[in-house]
Amino acid sequence: MREAEQIHVFGLLLIMIIAILFAFIRDIRFLLWFSIFNIIMNLYPIFLQRYNRNRIGSVLNKYR
Image 1 (cartoon, rainbow, N blue to C red):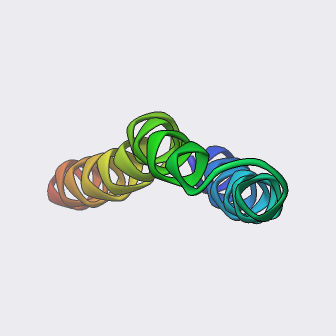
Image 2: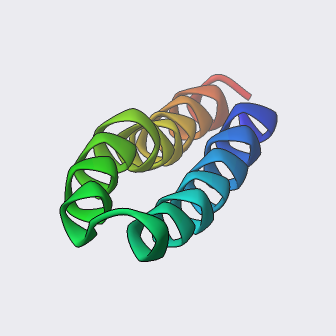
């Protein structure tokens, strides 16, 4: 789970950098739409994986 979380963090940062660069080249609206897409595709899974990791950890600790 930590690897998947790290991949999403890397993707989040990479896409934000690309979106900022394209916003300067083209239009600032591009940054807005790409940021919304980026949050849905990367930020939400990061939080979900952290939440699930904590839940799985607590269940595993009960049975140890």
